[in-house]
Image (cartoon, rainbow, N blue to C red; front, side, top):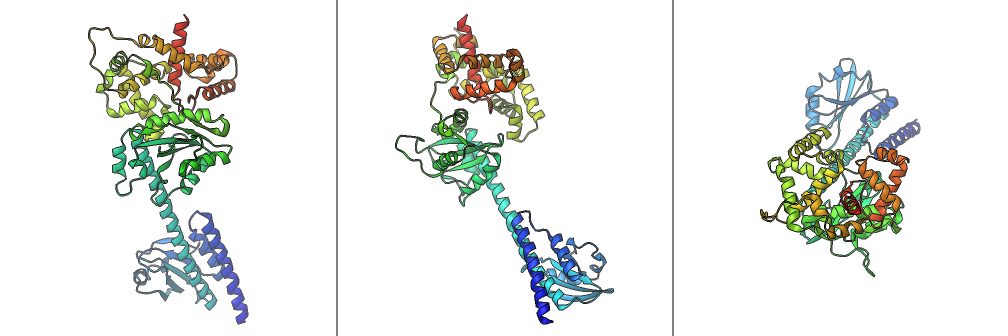
Length: 497
């Protein structure tokens, strides 16, 4: 009989161990109710897990007699406080066995109630189950702590990145007092924009995260706007792809990930001072547009002359200052939202800032009223974007009141602007040039473009993707290259007449 009892106990313990293994590997946290119901089926004893001195039940078997807990209140207080480990009591007609779990108070208490005293085997199994529950709950707490840590490190990395993208590296340093990443001690940074399946981003971030929550000489941050983008910023102490040079550390890791995964692509910016991270992001976005169809699916941004760089400086800045003067009375929030909305869809601005789309629209409506412009029109957005770039590039010179104020058309009719437009559009095939013009004329509405050209919407999108690749400009994701196309087409069309 003893051997039979030992065999029974070994069998049920194996069943309990299997349940614990299943729960531990599920990652969903301990299912206490399931363990308690399993224990009831083995022992015919009703079980409850009481979590504090007030007799709060975390979980119990179906039909557990809650009325037994009232008379046990003083006993539960002593057990929760660590004065007793186990106790047996009679509550009405029920035999009650209590066992405290864990080494530190306030300790949860496993309460078993049955019409008669459980058998020794049942008592042993209740005790074993209590030990397993302690381990499961401790593992669950460890998982919660780990997930909380990962969430907080992501929030910190995102805050640092946001400060850098806002041109405020000193603010980024203040956010990281006591654990400043090496990136913030560097002179220059380079931004790598990795396109990969959304589900892969967390795995990549965790795989290469160091104990401080950063990634060696930089940081990797899930893009809050585009689910397939991972934003990676590292010190710019080496040029990617230089002849005979092998990248080290995390940048080399990104290149290897792209090489080994056909669904990945990587856009790489040039080197920039820390306060110019926003420009680095824009360059990486353009490079990523080219990388999607490039050999090896990796592309680095090759410096191109910007439109603002070929315009007559004083006249251009006076024009920009005049256009944007109404923003002097706008709130900083409205101005910041407007800057973002010139480079990404409104829904993306709302997601990035944690605002509702209606709130973003309300801020833009106020700015529209001040400027007297329709910011849903792509040409108006291109003009405002150019003015914002010009106003932020150099201190505005004193206006020359003896010269008439230039218009945007005046600025764009110079030979240097014409040469810039020709160089920008030169890689385009005729059909893609035609599609881009129709797309701009349709205010970047692909459906309206398809109707105007008599082709399918999918064909329009294919043409635009091809144009992105040859131009090296992002047109469809963040859309940061649309403004250049608007101005380049306008210049080329004006000179054609």
